[in-house]
Image 1 (cartoon, helix red, strand yellow):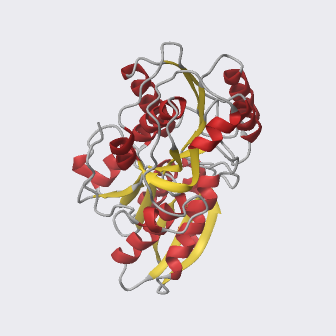
Image 2 (cartoon, rainbow, N blue to C red):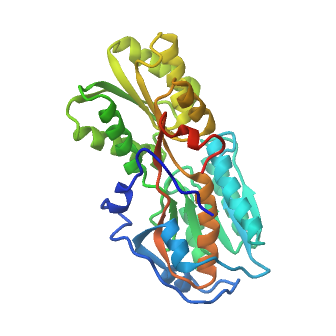
Image 3 (spheres, rainbow, N blue to C red):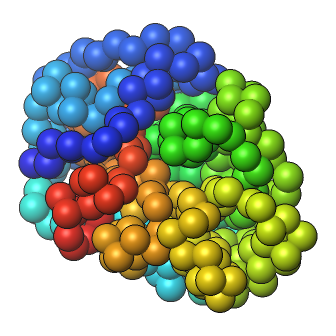
Length: 355
């Protein structure tokens, strides 16, 4: 089911880093029940091994293909589908639900700032007979009240990418955002052995992904003292804002050597700024996510690389995790879906879509 990755750099550090939810990498075991119904709050919470982190491939090997009863319904509350990344997350969720014959429903919001709208949709989903609630929260705590309510009813709660919840019993499915930022720093360091000035274009300051990617990038730079972070500013995931900010950064620092953009949408804005300055190919641009448009620009030589995530796999893994829990099997608190570098060397391996 899962495509074997052939990245230039796989984020193996994600499995080894000391992280809040990761005390060790272990494969949980579980019962053989394939019940479609849910139990009590204590039943669901006790099945989630909050101190464990296991990669999805190992977990699938250990637990096998999940089964679902005829009355199972999975609900996914996503973010704006105007961002194609979340479209791929949805696609993975819906395709796996269909494959396994599970009823499902997806709820999307209008834009990346629609926190109240997302909360309303999550509450609505919970009131419509969902057997499990999956969500990609816009902010770290915005949906905690709904997760708590779901768990109190014996309904599994699963976060897909971003905003890992601190509510006991909520499972996180996705990569380590701090490791993503650190990997970007390491990659830039490898491309700039003589060092130089670098800049970072940040996402929305309220986003866990933005915060953690930024923390990871700065931590990575500390390992490479010949790289100097001279500018860092939020463009709130927006292409046009990123272009404007990058233009100003290049004007203030004409000797800038590299940009790290916390998502590919902003990396494309940085690319436009670099192109306009006549510096295409001279200034490194590293994004995050691995969206198709970014990979096209990598292939063309206009963007250097992206730390590619695997949203389709995350959506698939979310369905499987929900069904394992409903079947009474133990799962780790963190189902790891590691990201990896895509650059000129391996971009041809990913001509369409997202893994």
